[in-house]
Image (cartoon, rainbow, N blue to C red; front, side, top):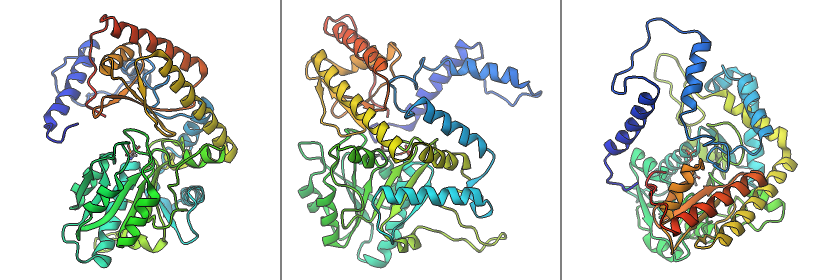
Amino acid sequence: MPADLPYELLRGALEAGVRGVRSKMGVDPDSRVRLPRAGSSWEEVERELAALRDQDTPEAFGRLSLYSLKGSSEVQAVCEKAHRMFFSRNALFAPYLPSVARMQIEVLDMCLGLLNAPSEAAANLTSGGSESLYCAIHAARDWAREHLPGAETPEIVAPYSIHAAFDKGCALMGLRLVRVPLARDYRADIAAMRSSITKNTIMIAASAPCWPFGLYDDIPALAELASSKGLWMHVDACLGGYLAPFAEAVGHPVPPWDFRIAGVTSISADLHKYGFAAKPCSTILWNHADLRRHHYQPITNWPCGLYLSEALLGSRPAGAVASAWAVMHFLGQEGYERLARAHLAVAAKLREGVEQIGPFRTWPSELAVFAFGSDEIDIRRVVAGMTTRGWFMMGNQEPPLVHMTLDAVSEAVLDAFLADLAQVTAEVRSGQATAVADLTYT
Ligand SMILES: *Cc1c(COP(=O)(O)O)cnc(C)c1O
């Protein structure tokens, strides 16, 4: 979304969608809904919820549409059951709930192990990749006040492909994000990043891999650059952080990105993506436990005494913590490896199938993302046609690309997807399909 797009536009799009759904369901589209005077039975409420749910694109989150990563239906079931067992507990109160405290600490221990963290490292559980990034930005800012006192308006130097949450976090915490144009291969341009460092720079950030293209930045080179300048190095592995260890274990080449690289200060990695935990669940890992001095904000000067939360949020669902713990135990190393193999097979089959259909240029995306564009046909028409057939697809604007996050879906789903894609492509080529999808909102 362009930075100058007024927020009313987005708001307007949401409200238009709501008006559409209300009209279809026989509710006055322009009324302001009020709390009903009398309550309803669960059966009535459930009926309405089901009708509402059916307004979404059919199977929008079920087929190849992978924006709600599932792993498999068994994994999903484990996740749901574990979540339900701890549904009513608040993870903010983990100090009073040994069950939640233990699950949280053990999940984080397992995560530190998976990312090859040194023994002095530590981690915190957060409610999503964005929050993990805000934690990294916040801790680095406070760390820099001690270690880089020359930085007046602290800056973060990052490749153009870094996640949007960086802009938001920097805006919230009074930092400036310097997005450096990408190299020709759409990865971080190391020389350009080096020359963007000023006396205000406190952090270098890069992705492993990035959301838009699924490409790994050269983390070893950037970590070395950060080390040589005494800067904080953050690796955003929100997307692939809990897929890469298993892909590597089954022999897939994964570029180096984790704590085995000297100079990596912090890593963000989402359990609610390829960890297959329920949302919201992510992790922020620090290469040394001492860095958490800059993370925690203990509050004592209010009537209740000490207030200390795990990360930025207060109340959090313990169900998400339980789901992460449960899925990690249900799958184990072997289960995650099995899913990683299936996932890699999906990526290979998609690539081959899409290339066979013809007018597409697939991207050398690594692991989590499969992206393709076209120099011949308008990719936005392809997205529109596929959406009409019930495939939920997102895109990239620069350049126009179809952007798919992969999951270990079945052969049958892949075949159906490729058959529809071949048909839509033929229609776009013959000029039959003229609808254009908007790739502006991710
Ligand atoms: C998903 C993602 C984020 C943001 O995570 P949320 O869980 O949506 O807050 C940040 N960075 C990358 C690379 C991501 O893929």
